[in-house]
Length: 270
Image (cartoon, rainbow, N blue to C red; front, side, top):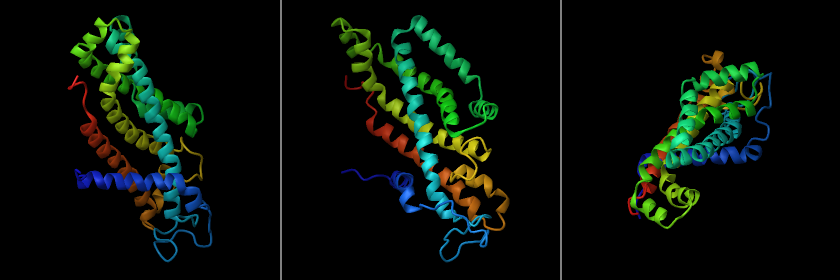
């Protein structure tokens, strides 16, 4: 059995810890937002390994509870954009013609817009909100998936196994879904991991600006924003959520690359 590279094993460990925190936070830290104004901001000490913020909230508990918003939201963005990208990019690459032209003009239009800036403007105009931020990012991330899937389909559509399927008079939909898509799935999967990482950072950025989760909610971006002025009083109140965002995003990229290398067949044996 092949041993995992150290970097991949470490990335899996990070993602496992984040996943456990996201799922188990209600039981692990049921009172993560509990305040102790008498204590106020303090450095690491007994009962508070990462110290407390200016409201007396335990930073470690906020960090664990913050995974509940950081992970599901980014996952929704990655899955949503992947679904749209596959539904649009697959027929665009295989059928070509006006379908391809229409899909690519839409993708070009969306690519011309700075995703995070558009998300900030839309969320700001419509009053912000976590659900709105996720929806906007899904729409803005989907063109990347569309182009990636289309490019992979273009590589596959003239291969012998596709020509053989056409000679059998199989429908275009059956060829796309049953024959072409399984061979481009590794590409779509690897890109989904990249989108997961980008969405994690983007949602944290929106929360940092006050356009994501509501004030007072445990969230990595929000915690970073709330404590940025307390860097000298308790550096861990700022460093910990920042490290959580960076480590999770890096781990997603490492695992995505590793999975792509492991499952990339793309019709080589067909």
